[in-house]
Structure formats: structure tokens, C-alpha cells
Length: 70
Image (cartoon, rainbow, N blue to C red):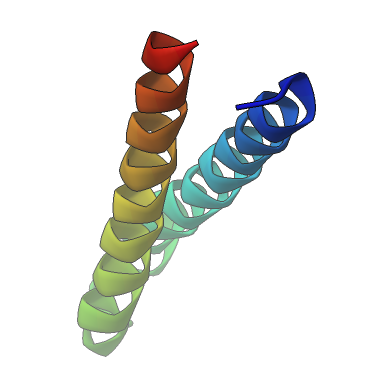
């Protein structure tokens, strides 16, 4: 794996982490500011947060595997 490939994976991890943090913030805002009135938004917001965190975990695992082979 080239240095460019590793940098691309690092960039993907950073982007995934940023997106996961944004989704977590949205979930936090829902809980802190809009409940109980917006309770119907909980499943969709929670799923989006979970999916974003899972994408970050997968990107991190790919980066760690790539770093281990170089």
C-alpha cells in the first residue's frame, strides 16, 4: 500500500468521524431540546447516528489493517 493510499484512508476516517460527531450532536439536541414533543424523531435520528458510527468503525479498522501491513 502506498503512502497516498494510507493518506486517503486517513482522510476517510477523519470524514467518517466528523459525520458521526455531527449525527451524535443531532441526537443530543433532540434529547436535550425537543423531547418529549419530538419523540417520533428518535428512531430515525438514532439509526442515522448508529450508521455513521458504524461507518467510522469500519473505516478505522481498514486504516489499522493497512497500517499493520506496511
